[in-house]
Image (tube, rainbow, N blue to C red):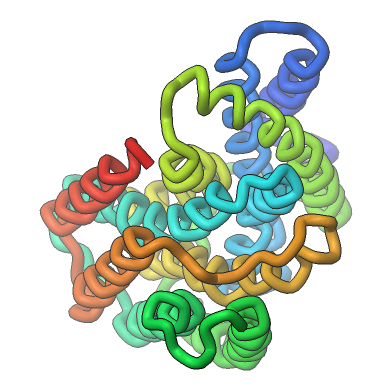
Length: 358
């Protein structure tokens, strides 16, 4: 086709348009409290998938390393919009839980599902250990930095009472570390490119550059509108479903906002593209810890949301530490199987259940 669209592309675009339109309709027509929430969550996930497809179309031009980084960054756009609108609505607890939930969902649920899908189909899978260890350690160190403001408050240190300022220091430091890590990340991935080529569907036409960029812009714009509607529907749905703000942020918002990594990472593992799968899945929590959370800290006052700090509740801290430590242990040997994946999913379910009541 002239624009490079295949049947699957056209179906995805069509479904995204319908889902966004349906979400808008629910804002002007009274259909209850749950339906608008469900439709907007599905629309967010579909728009995230469209962002992922557009970034995939840029793969040949950017290289595999840059593609993985850009895919994770743009795949988190819906979640960034949701967090901004939620902060403006005063849902600070939802945003804190969503940040932690995104890290948990990728490092436990999605990574576990990828191990299960790949392990059941291919047996024990092996991946390049250096890149996986680097991502795991970056995630561990980033989470450690995120926890410092909460620890200063809970331990009643001399810095207690200055958590907002300390959070800004941590935010700037994490952003600087992320920027400094980019050249090495891209170079290292490029060197491994011949061994793990970026997967493509057989016979799939290639999007022209202007089409891929245009789709990224349109999907991002659509995600901004849908995120606003999603947040408007969030509080009524929480009351109707009798779930806590913490559970809504930890599970619902986190999974809906990370649909790209959820789908792409599992598909890559099932195709035995384990190096690329690990990169896509673990790059997301690294960027959430090093980019998304710091950006929210710095821009919250600028968007009329007041101060947003990194002082997390104790249970979120404990869940975050456990998840990151387990992830580091699992990926350090460079091998995975379905049983490891099942245990990661089991830990995620237990943590999510602990937040059902708040």
